[in-house]
Image 1 (cartoon, helix red, strand yellow):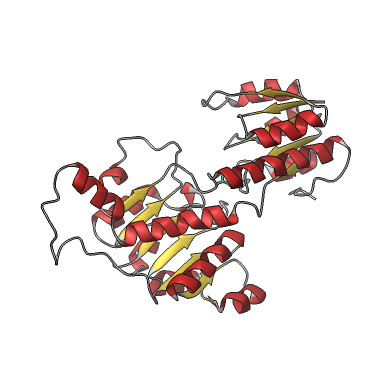
Image 2 (cartoon, rainbow, N blue to C red):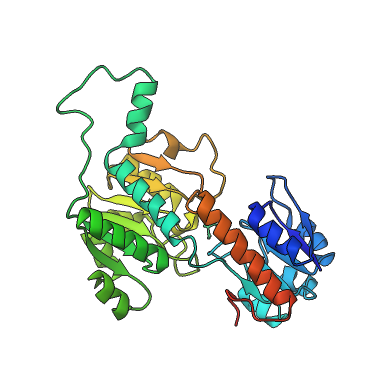
Length: 320
Ligand code: DGY
């Protein structure tokens, strides 16, 4: 059968699909396809492997209801209208599970980098402003024994909590829509209200999905409730924080610093004021970007397509 890839994926996934006898068309350009281009291409194929934030809305599914499946190469699916996919009986799968360790590593990397102002220190040397060792300058904040507040304690949040407990003896508190007693017991974590998460955390790390409920939830009101020494880390989706309010909070020293692997929009404009603020580290959405993890994601997406094209249930189907 014919499969359209919205981007090139690691060779392992391509090979698996080719060995299964499928014909692949790969859109290799970095420029994202427009909605109309994607619909047009999807119409000529039996399945789509979608990478990144292609907007797969109700109109897409209405026009592409012939598709045997959509396999996303991501865990997040906020860009997909799952109800519409179900209405038109198009199964959609994601790559949940395989990227939790790599993404939580980036959250940890940002926590450390922001707590020690690492990126700004790099810039200081680069710009010729480091004049020598100073006992009272460039001081960071230690993470040992501090409170880590996780907003959205799912697979990625759990991996982060494990590292924070094992390496830094951090206290774990979390806020989810629902309590999860099993996870609480596993991590010795405490469930708190959103307000308490804001008030008690030394570091807040965002691991929620993006929805109407979570969009812009970290706004001026939320930042004002955080400690002035707190770090805000987001490796989930950029639209969960309000960028303007975050910039204000950092400029006014309402919070200590921020580490972002996700922004809204992506890519971030190179003149964005966040890039010139001290105590801010911004990365270009590299949470899952390791050789090992991307291979696993590609293989998982390929296996999902192979299942659907064999009229079997996709192992990671979202709309059951
Ligand atoms: C994911 O898997 O959701 C990553 O953020 C890449 O989109």
